Amino acid sequence: MPFLASYRRILAVPGAALFSATGLVARLPISMVGLGIVLLVESATGSYGVAGAVSACYMIANAVLAIFQGRLLDRLGQARVIGVASILFGVAMVVFVVAVRADWSSLVSYGAAAVAGASLPQVGSSVRARWSFVLETPADKQTAFALEAVVDEAVFIVGPILVTVLATTVHPVAGLGAAIVVGVLGSVAFAAQRRTAPPVHAVRRHHVDRPAMPWRTVAPLVVIAAAQGVLFGGAEVTTVAFAEEQGNEGYAGGLLALWALGSLLAGVMTGAVTWRAGVATRVRWGSAAMALTMAPLLFVDSVPLMGVVLLAGGLAIAPTLIAAMSAIEQSVPSARLTEGMAVFQTGLVAGVAPGALLSGVVVDHHGASTAYLVSLLAGVAAALAAQALPRRPRVDAPGAVSRAPRGSR
Image (cartoon, rainbow, N blue to C red):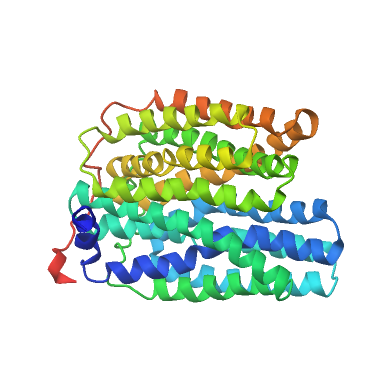
C-alpha cells in the first residue's frame, strides 16, 4: 500500500528491521512483569494488597533507576550496559520467583523485585536512539518513532494477555517465566547488534565538556509525561471497575485493548503522514485532544458504548507521544539522547502508580464513572504544561554526531 512506503524505506536500512524486531521482544517484560508479580504473589499469599505492594516496589525501582541507566547507555554504550542489565534482571527475577514459591523472608522478595525493576534494560529508549543514529532526515525519524509507538502498543496488547493466560491456565510461575526468557534473550540479541548502535560518548575529565540538557524543552515534556502517566494509570483502574459495575468484569481487558488499538492505528497513520506542523504544536494539540477524550467517559453507561469511546480516545495517544519523542530527539544533544528519552519514559512510568491509586480511592467512594475525573484532570494538566514548550525546539542539538551514509552499514 502506498501509505506504507515510508515504513518500507526505513526498514530497508541495513540492520534496522532486526534491531526493531528484537527490541519488540525485549520490551515484552514491560507489560508482563508487573501483572505477573501480582498473579504470582496473590496465588502464594492470597493477598492482593501484598501483591500490589511488591509490584509497586518493582515499578518504583524501575522509575528511579531508568534515568541513571540511560546515562550509562550514552557513556558506556548499549552493548555493555544492556548486556549486563539483562543478566542482572534475569538473575533477580529468578531469585524473586524462588523466594515467593519457597516462602522465604518477604525482605528477599521485595529486594529481588527492586533489583529486577532497577536493572530492567531500557530497550525502548535504546531502540529510538538507534533510529536517530541510522536515519538522516527528520521525516524518516518521525516514521521510525511512529513505528516504535506501534510496537509499544502491540507490547501492551500482547503482554498482559500472554502473562495472564500462562499464569492462570498453565502455572502461576509460567507467566513470569515467559517474561524472564523473552526479556533476557531479546535484550541480549538486541545488544549484540553493534553495527547499528550509536557511538559511545565517554565522559571527559572536565565536567564543562559535557553538553547541557536543554531543560527549557525537556522539563515541560517530563511534566506532560507524568500527567499522562496519571491519565493512563487512572483510566486503566477505572475501566476495570467500570466493567465490574456493569456486571461484565471479563470485558475489562477487551476495553483496554480497544483503547490500545486506537492508539496503534493512529500511530501507523502518523508515521505515514508528512507533517507541516512543528513537533511542539503537535504536542500541544495532542495533549489537549487526550484531555478532551476523557470527558465523555464520565457519562457512558454501557460496555459496548465504552468500547467505542475508548477506541476513539486512543487515537490521540500515539500521535502525541510520537511528537514528544521527536521533540526530544531534535533538542537533546546526541551525547545525552538516550538519557533524555529515558527521562521522558520515567515521567510516564512515575505517573501510573499515583493515577491508579487516586482513581482507586475515588472508585471506592464515588464509583467508576466519577473516577474518570482523575484522568480528565491529569489530561488538562498535561495540556497546560504543553503550553510551556518552546515554539521551535532546537533542531541541530549541540554535540551531534555525524551519521554514516545508509549504504555503509
